[in-house]
Length: 450
Image (cartoon, rainbow, N blue to C red; front, side, top):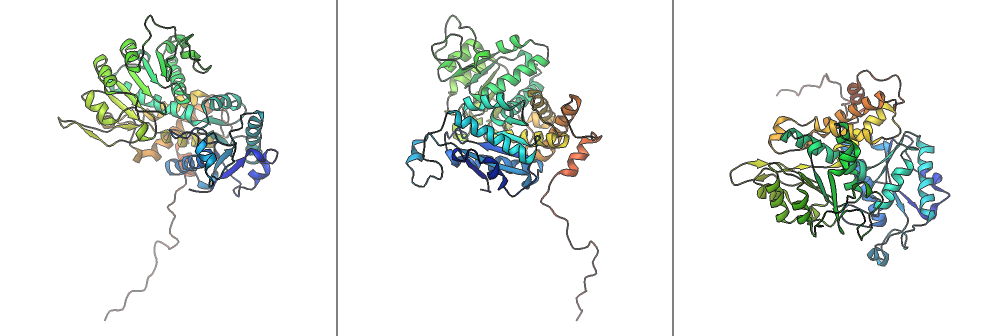
């Protein structure tokens, strides 16, 4: 693990001096977590630092962002993980998570300290915060800072790109899809809202689009007036209860007859084979996204999806799966809906244009740019995403699309506007390959002949 900056709630009032201790003076991307909701692992407290470090490594590996321009941060406000609180070797604060006004004041001070030192157009990426705080901070800061939440917006963009790729395979426009989510947390809601935006762009009203999206969480179908509380962020997708309320996800599939099911919740393992059989019976080309991480928590495997649907499904996962070969010899390569397809190119687009505030439309454009990178041979292999081996080119293409959008909508502040945006970005990409200091032509002495 590389170096990172730890900030404790005990440091309130001194955050700027702590930020000043970071040795680099030209930071362009900050990834911050408070460790409350790490992947499918839960509350890891300060041990969540691996996430910001890893994300920033991907900025460098996938898009050529200079390593010294990246700053990983872990905010320590305690942990609600009882195992860590009993662990004598735990490195963080031995206290329950602070959920008072002091926590909000700490985040406010942190945001001000980062932008005071590195500038208003420094990208601050929120990662793996708890659901409530994730949505709250996104609403609070999106108009004041250059910030986004990767779990909400990055995941949404890569999932929508998968749906747009499926549209290329089936010819069925996105406005005709009926989507059922297994899970209704920040990732699922982010995806749902971006799907709505794509449907609206294609001629639907917001109300019509939302009616085509249903959610099923740990309490069952998200419905108006249900006994278990519906979160304010879920309300747009809380529909009137049907005459017969389904008692399981399988029953919900049978009743709603979705074209697409998207699994994104940490418990995982929640899509039994009967669900896949139902989807195969309802649709000629069922779309099945098992996006929960890590691999052991995926709602189903690629092998299960392709085998049960006899190769007819369009499948994507949050974790990598090996290619699947059916009995008739057909081989399918499952697409991995990894956020690394989106956020590195997104940052280059911001850096190249000095973009500031992040509209959701930026992520819609990034999703479309990602889909454009798919070749016909990729689609024939069952891929919904281009090979990760092409990630540098994918990131540059997304960066160009983001830059074009920001300039076209008056959201860019780098002038003069580069005429050739792709060439401009390529000229800035960092590489670990260095030119030799030895001249190309060097008169090496010839060995003596004996």
